[in-house]
Image (cartoon, rainbow, N blue to C red; front, side):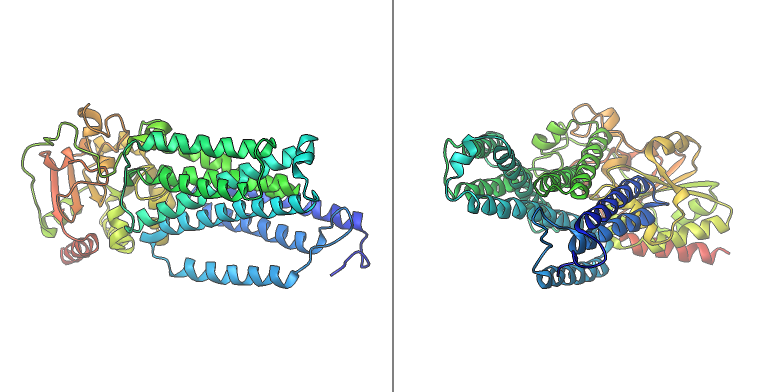
Length: 489
């Protein structure tokens, strides 16, 4: 398809394309800003998606290279767009809220794979244009040396992101267990240095072979697997956001290769946002990123400090007892956790909230930054059940309110409410900021059993005098609470 003989000249078409890229970049920035609030997140996502759509179609129909050639093989391009859109739509519609972290990991891995493939394809183009003498071109330096460096950077980061995201997906799905090899960190460091060394030797022309790119890609994939494999489940929110930043950086390198400003800006935004989110997640656990990557927190080797765990007895209650506490409370704070997502009880908890409010009870939700299996998991879960965004209160804002709260209802949360983070210096979660639910007058913990949380340690909260344990499936227990409250009217 040649549009140069149409309404606009080549220069006019490219100018229009640049304006489209500018608009798209602005929508990315605006959309990313709106994602910072549950109220505006959905609208921000749609705005950013609109910007990406016009950027894609603008590139397809208006882009021309230096020779005035438009994109060709449009049947394959549109075939891929249709197929990818259909698959993505079906998967997104069918996925359960409990599997949302897995879907995010999988889609992020696909982004990393695309970035790696871009580098491979562009490397083959560069080799084909070198007339078989790529070393001579490298020795001349300049643009070829720069492009080779960018290709290898995009290939390495994209491959690590792809392999790491797939391993994270498998862990979240429960199909892959934590595995720590003897000398794991030494192996990882040695492998990473080998990857960088081989890539550098090829870029500089010291060790050139056509298969070097694929050797580096294979080693980067292996590193991605070994990089994520030992990291414990409780650190998955950090890992997901970190891998997301990797994919963004890899995409930005693709933007460099194609001199595509909107691809570059989009990659930079994703990379920087993922990095900032990673820092926020680490701060929420009071741990450094290095500690997350080598500490195996929440993995199979995580223990309970000195191994003895908290001592004492627990006070079990039934739905009838719990409903009385809730009905005669003036203020109730609900703490959602991954157990709420597993039970798919978000709609029932919203019904409980509305029922309590009809009785004159003030109800709020306390959101911990790392509750669930991905950043913002609880916000997404509760938004699905139409919980008012204003009732979702972040940790630093809700903690001062627990002292004036009559009842805290903890649903499927564990480590984020464990007082050991403040009292037990031998605990692996010591120093991690938590929700101060123990300061409330009464606490009801809804849990299937006394099993340890994802960090693999006992929870001191369960043995406190003011804590009431309501054992059972979250959805069934919440349904029973709703029934009990209705029967009291």
